[in-house]
Length: 344
Image (cartoon, one colour):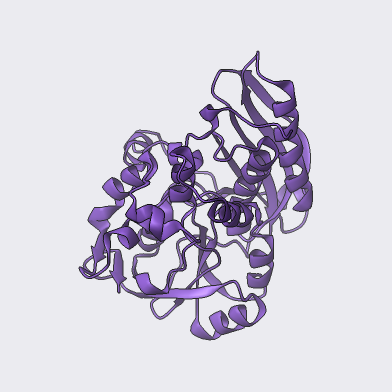
């Protein structure tokens, strides 16, 4: 019989992230330190930090650094480890970088089943190696609630970094995955998730953003972010505010995972979804005719979500021709009354 994690594992993954409202308030008290080698810090809530190593390396080179870990969102430990790795790697791809090393972060009960831990670590290692990166080590803590993830380092050319700050009016917004992993994970916790819906969600969460990143690398990407714990509208808000623009998103253009709309109608909402909506809603102008279940999904916290890229229409057409999983969900406009406008 395959090893299974306990019911403790169904805590909702990225849904357990700290409330963005609390995090935003806390960061305001942290002193800003100016350093010319910091090319991307946390001021604009970007996906990862970027530090310039050109002087030390003797050539144009910067490192991308990020960290992410969470509680299990699936029962199978190997799959959980692989999803956690894919999720952590995603932030490097969102910056246009290439992952090179990873450090594991493990929280596991001292009296837990060692075979579960072995499976988690193997799943994560296989996914890290799939990306081309290597694991250098890590850190572990003994605690009852299982958590797992990675600190990932990547490399990028200092003049070719993608950030969330340069979306331009007239740009097209392209997204590369479907929405709904949060409500499906919550449906699993409640014993409501259908096997084929869960399988589709897991398949997407296991998919690296590597191919999407590589398809974008030869194009003029104005802004990019990955959509994870703060949901589509949460990460779109960060891009809009950092770029001084309004992002117009068509709800009918957004693609959802199988079962996601049904589970949203059943209100399989995590605490993370409610936190996201509470924080972001004041920045959103929502068309009144959009059904409540679709509105909720736009705030749904995602695990190992897709890349949201802002680029000129001609560049977007090239992307879609080489990466058919991508699709247009909206446009960038001059800053209006709200940073985000959701149309039908």
